[in-house]
Image 1: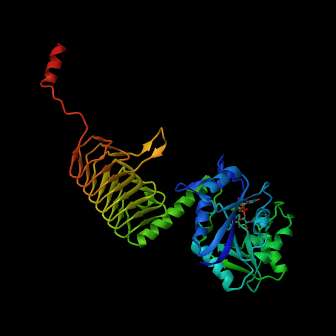
Image 2: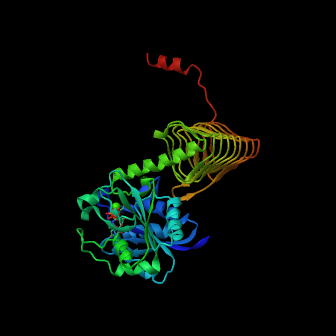
Image 3: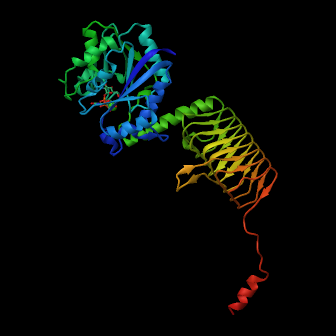
Length: 432
Ligand code: UD1
Ligand code: CA
């Protein structure tokens, strides 16, 4: 680990256009809140980092989420949303005498990558900058703050869309809303921000001009892929960000040698790794952290809900749902099954329609089941957790298994088949 940094994440804004009672930063992509994607990107940086989230609208819910999932993250309340500059000021008491670099970013830009954040910090450090803003180019830059450079190419200031002149609006280089600053120097700017602009807000962007006026070094570091800075303001944006995120990951997987039969209908969370020569069939939805080894076949129409560890040569077929499942080599779960909280050995065959009953709705507890190597489960069986089914055991179709099974045994608990001879003929006779 290198030296310490701090991150301020702005998330107090209302998100009016989401038309939601849920705070914007808690809206989800692959079942993970937007703020969480941003925090995780920061946490993967090769620095000792500490994040501060500025909360405001829906503060209670955001705080509760962060307290549960990111215990080390600090929050600071911005009671009134008086602008992005005012938002950052709320972190001043927490950071008072911090002496390193601070990154500022937004809680509604889930596509920002660790690589880009790291490049921004490196650029800032290598060029002895005091304030570096991450910029990008847009063919249609509408809505973004424009980067005003001097004739020598120095970043002079940022002008918001609503304050821009016609010629400034022509500028295609924009402010991504991500900054790296030398805290002990630039923090003084926050007490001097003014709100004399078209929106009557304290603009964070005004720190650029302040730093220039105070003879600090201000630089712009540019990111090529402008999708990284895509911010979410509406449900349409949320869908678009989901699509960008999944396409980015599918491309990376295909480049590594994974076959994705139909990228349009396949959703795989970037937190899922898949090895080469595995084939993912259409309409597969994979969320959360999962590991899938090589030569597996997944789908069509499979759903993985996280925490699955799938070894080489495993087949997961249509309408199969998996959660918290570890499956060893060459096992098959081919049709219509639910496997949750299970450890499954190698060469196991799970027949069609098998359900792992892992949840007790009265105690609200989840229990795990274990199937050892070469076990065979007949179709339409229920495995009621916790049970252990030992090597080579065979479960007859339609059994409800509530007790452990010894190695090499047959277990069945369905009622014996009954046959009533000539029942149909006799029935017809009765009706005459
Ligand atoms: C901001 C930048 C703009 C940049 C764009 C990039 C300013 C003045 N403008 O504009 O130059 O191109 O981001 O996306 O900074 N927030 C608070 N408290 C507030 C106001 C905002 O926490 O009082 C948060 C919002 O929740 C959001 C972020 O700050 O996460 C950005 O605010 P937003 O209003 O979306 O700024 P933009 O107008 O997009
Ligand atoms: Ca915005």
